[in-house]
Length: 100
Length: 521
Image 1 (tube, rainbow over the protein chains, first blue to last red):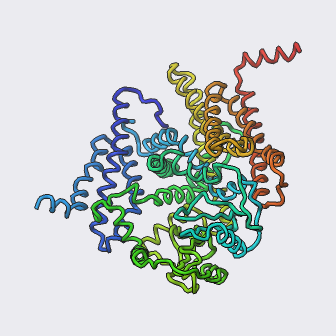
Image 2 (tube, one colour; image 1 turned 135 degrees about the vertical axis):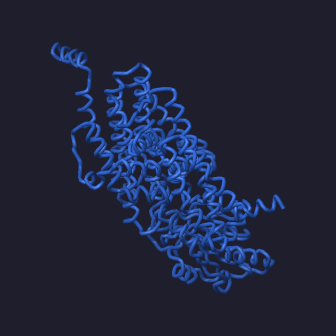
Image 3 (spheres, chains in turn blue, orange; image 1 turned 30 degrees about the horizontal axis):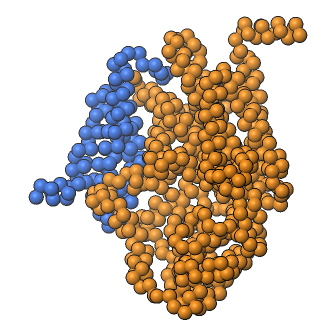
């Protein structure tokens, strides 16, 4: 069932891309997700910190699985790209300070 | 891996992720399982410390008497008390709190010199730092733990027949049996595997995932931690400001009631420190042993006035969110529930190790025939994986038991003896790898398993030959050695199983040649 030996060069490239997307893209997504969640939770900062961080390992797991489960490479990218808007929410005050 | 079904892609990920990080994960799980009994192993490694069954209060009095004679003018005393799990009574002066210090005989109060040893703490440290610089090690172990989580979830996905597999075991059927063993151990203890992996990550949660700290505290982790501990920090700061200059000599408050009071508030006590001992302004801080409850309470303590014996500060409670994190960390540390819980964790940990090991072995067995028909490069790859499997599973186990043998066999006066024990650990592991690369796969497994079994079975003999005490005077030592013998017997049985298979699997011409030889002799 498992294809253990990649048949061609393009298969290798596909695997390499997905691995990078899973590890780095997945972490970026998780990081941004956690920051946004911590920002949005209506709790004291201390509590928001813990409540947002504890589930992050499950979020990362799902992101890694997504990178390998996605039908195409393009779909695998979606998760990593979602990090941008999420980071915008999470670091909104810092961004406003930088601009204003 | 183009155009595959969801299950297929998950199977691919499970196979390759599991293989590449399985070697590391086995090392983490095995040392972690041994670390469940770190204090007991530590006791075994310091046979000079006599077993202590008396009360903590008596031991404390002896420590204070010793300090009063030897260090009457020290700015502070630290005392680590013997507990249910350890007979160590140690004292030190000054700021140093953990490790080191002077060991005392808890029954007589006389100083004793124990051998220098890496101690049972080695397995604990290796479990989360791999004996590397702390931060690097923690990150590598974190990556492995994430891979474990991914492997577990993808493993569940590829098991549609999860309930059926629960009851399926077909022993003696080669490849099928290895897969069954992997599935059964995986499914049976799935909650444990998930719990131990996830809570392991939670221990260093702010280090691995600092996003919320960066967003809400501008990346200042210390500020976040201070905020988390809230009350305790404020109190500590207030105390730092109000240091009374020590004055006249005043006797210490009676320690018995203080110990009883602290125990009532926090559970069994692990140690205490006394600021300005035997002077006015004396202050006693009592620490509980780690984990009287599920919550992991590092740095928890209760303060008493050292002259009047009055309570200065009650132990502070965690806020609910922090309590959640600490309970998760506590579930990983397994310091609650006493010995029954400890044995349960040990058994579950061993099953986890078995699951990882059978998974690694299954990878090779499933592909043996396939690789044999392919190019020399893939045959070489297969051979390398087989060797690494052997070195990672049995080689590491050899290194662990080798550390215990080194503890008894290295010369007592060897400088930096503890470091040498660790060196022996790594030398044995490297030798295991060299042997695995050199010997044919199944033969290599048999030889290393037999050696491992013999080292386990021989441990009580070695201990008897090198120490003056007999094992049954010390229940902890007795249990450790009995467990080793039981494991040795199980390993011997396993070695026999593999040896039978090795005989079958031997290439036909060689077998014929051997038969010929037998006939001639």
